[in-house]
Image 1 (spheres, each protein chain N blue to C red):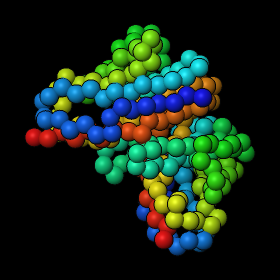
Image 2: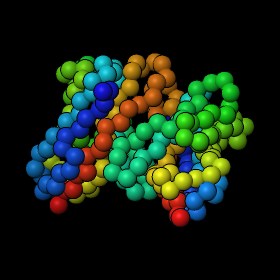
Image 3: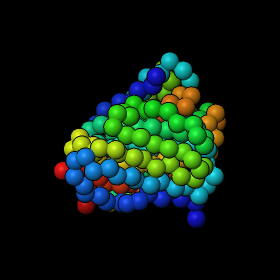
Image 4: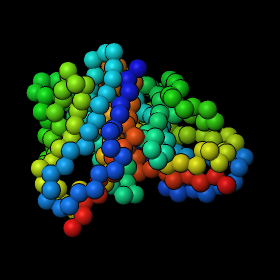
Length: 111
Length: 114
């Protein structure tokens, strides 16, 4: 079975500052990695995913994540955040049909 | 529009009163799943279904039932709700079972059991 650890439950940052949301996983099988975002009072939306190939994946709104197999990490980064990025972010790992989510990181962007 | 719908969105009920939360998807997805979201615990899977008439337990199935009589619907049933089932519930679906596809989530159902 897989497990996911999101190292920070809350991350407050100022607008236009860089941010990193950390995610580590453990698994005994090959995995696929995902980041989901949950805006207030909404469901989860896929932000980006790593399936294979290039270890650096990007989303359309400026986020990127890098798969690091040796460190079993999949940290999410953005060089300059906006107020509208305020949300909860979930890291997820899938091995076979088993999908596990982290506990979530609440990103709060302050003006 | 491709979507997963859940009803109701909000529900307050009393201990022991049976309830059903409906979930429907219009994408002809084979795989459907129910999660509950609790602060500090993230999303935990309750039940999942790989296809019609095929269901299996997730990590926290106690106190819940599901059925999959049609491909598009996957209702969650609480036969005798208790306060520890107060939570935010999400239904999700994805295409296929052996290939990697993203999951699509419903808007959530906030359940309060008093």
